Length: 294
Image (cartoon, rainbow, N blue to C red; front, side):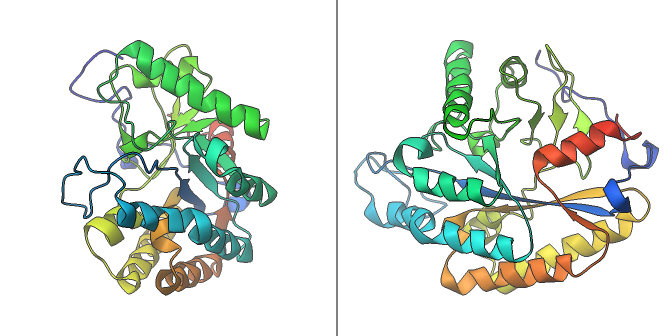
């Protein structure tokens, strides 16, 4: 991708698109994306979102918060999603394979899909040269494929970070959809080589990390945001279908005083007709088969 003022895709406003219909005339495709991430105790953490990480290790308390998500929180999330028949698409740091394979084993039992998400969240693609970036992307996908028997079809960069080279490297690595751009409620094609990637709508708004961690929302506020988001997309979806992403981090949403908010929000959404609970690949495949691609 050459540097440009606009993204590697056409500007197609929502009111100038063909009508999109999901299977069984669903108005909304509900897409739940938990982040399964490993963090090394050898790397320093900031103690607060607005602090800079120091150099002293181990930073036990912030590391321990994240470890709680991998020891307990993620399994609470699994149980809630199972209750509503939701098969998630997990963004997975490939280092999880080496350190916490039990999480991935259980995720596969629940029918979850895996997306590539770098080797570790400590490392972003920005600042890498093309060869380093290619090594990280291919290494992440290869490791997840060896573990699960399936090559991930989707990718979310650590920190949603990309370089001018990322999309072409992903396409060359066999990835089919990417979710870093957070700029739409419907999939669309990206102009990449050797094949066109699909953008799959991810959310930086309906996402517990910015809301609960950076903006200090209460779980009641976050639950209400999920409901409000759904209500608008559901109404709009009567005219042309939408994707609703709910983006989660088990160390945040999986603690005891917050998990009930997720449960209540999903009960509300799945209590409506015309809601299709799907994985990212299922949504992408249905969109490609529709008459509404652009």
